[in-house]
Amino acid sequence: MIADFLDHHFRHFNAAALVDAARGYVDHIRSGGRMMVTLAGAMSTAELGLSLAELIRQGHVHAITCTGANLEEDVFNLVAHDHYERIPRYRELTRADEEALLKRHLNRVTDTCIPEEEAIRRIENVVLAHWQEADRKGARAFPHQFLYDVLLSGQLKPYYQIDPKDSWLLAAAKQDLPIIVPGWEDSTLGNIYASHVIKGDIGHVHTVRSGIEYMTWLAEWYQRTSKNAGIGFFQIGGGIAGDFPICVVPMLEQDLLRKNTPLWAYFCQISDSTTSYGSYSGAVPNEKITWGKLGATTPSYVIESDATIVAPLLFTYVLERLAAN
Image (tube, rainbow, N blue to C red; front, side, top):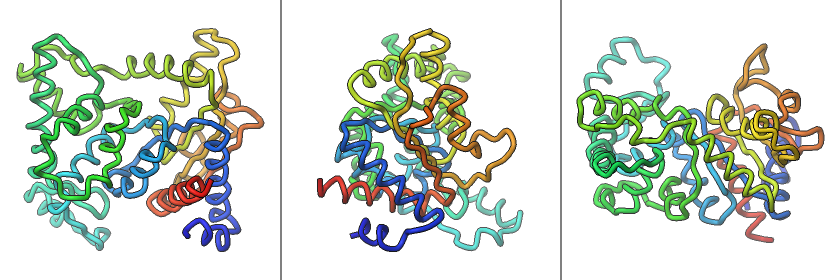
């Protein structure tokens, strides 16, 4: 078992932090807690669904906050995986090499190129019809709800190029898992949506609901859920995917004056950001105490490593230990 291997070999430094955080995750779930997972970076293009999807299916993830890129790129990978190109020697590319990739409509994310036609345009053609139907009806929905509708409709099944069990978004859609996507406008589909509003294909700019509405929805969810269970916060990377949802607690306590709002009950961050002056991604958990997000006794962990290495190991550890419960 992976968990036994980690317990035996991962004894010090970041390796020990990984095991400590995994054990804390297991303890939190066993005690009846709930867990939010936040996804920054390019975790979907890194195919995190290979481990995250099963964690969702087993009921060990109760909400996800992610960037618009992570939301859409899981679907891109689902329908266009065979057309992706990996470039292991990407550090050696010249500017001319990069232009050659552009001419082939290959958008590079580190060592992986997303194919524009097979991934982005294929999804655009399908989701646009859902946006336009909602627009005609005067209906509104969040970005993730439109993609849930697309996936659950079965329209994309003929194009699947990976085992669908490895899509974390499909697993989430089947469970109607709460997803928060702050700053969705800063994504490929967000840009595409704006272009169709400008062209007049969509009449109402607010057919897709906004980030402020996500926060008001999250506030209600947090209050309702935390009445019966502590809510943990498992953060991959930094940026808006982490900062946006964690702030719901001080907002409720300090701005809405909802006193006795429970703090986050567990915190872990996988980060390759160095601890630095003024950096949110590089801030240590103790700093969050001063903002009313965590408490002095909140189990808190930082694993300073590459999430593409750490997250699958930690998720597998959690799955194995909870399966043995």
